[in-house]
Image (tube, rainbow, N blue to C red):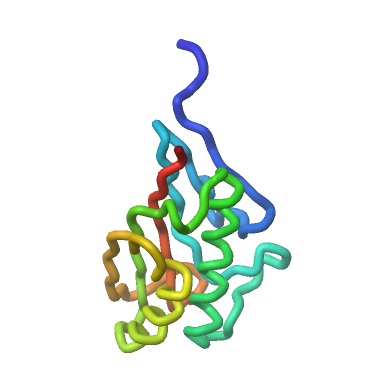
Length: 132
């Protein structure tokens, strides 16, 4: 059989998973990043205390750390999904998102309102990025 075509990506610069999954998995030249919520990787505590701006900034820091560990960056992200507890937060999230993903070719994206997120988070983001 040989080695697996799948590789788990983990970094201490992003929060440890809160369940039986990896921060990301690389496969076939692609990186599939699990959803990130606003956890501080050093303490495991939530950041922002419900402030959507602080929460999305931490989420984006966490995603960037996982991308970097895999050898890629936000310019290679091709798809994101944003999960919001309240779509009224969309404009704030969108403006901060644009600071990270607004240059060059912006990723394809979905943004949905959900009833709940882990640990009481107001926002979660996952992505798919090109590795090579």
